[in-house]
Image (cartoon, rainbow, N blue to C red):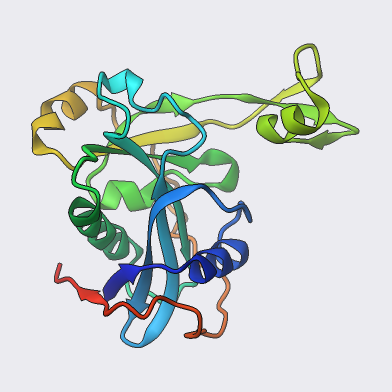
Length: 215
């Protein structure tokens, strides 16, 4: 398995075809995942929707970012290995980043098995509500941009998102341990989700030589 910087075309194709959100995040760093010569998708990092993502950890802006998308087609030998390798690359490309945050969406049946397998720290659940218009749930940012304030509108409580953190800076391990809680339990039948397969497409990707990493 090898990873390399992802092109914008690769990011768009992978997210729109292999991620449940079907939405492109504002990434600062994304990596294409290859199994041999087979392109398997992308892993994306960035600030995410929460501009104050650093504040709960008393770190500076830019020192905390989010793992935004794991958009893979199922042809990778190991999703957890792909995430681990992306974290190693991130250290090289973004040396100022000290902590990674990510969320496992219970609404999608996710408990965060990938994060548990790669030794992230579970720090609790975040619960939110979304506005409803004409019996349809709408993301808060989308609603605000189109309809203005959603204050006073009908709201539906969402299933929790399980929050995980991973320290790239080893000096933050004591902080992570102090915040850590027992992992959410997974059901016996739960397995890592595998996205539908699609033909590999080589054109449009970065021509930069791939960086090979060993586990």
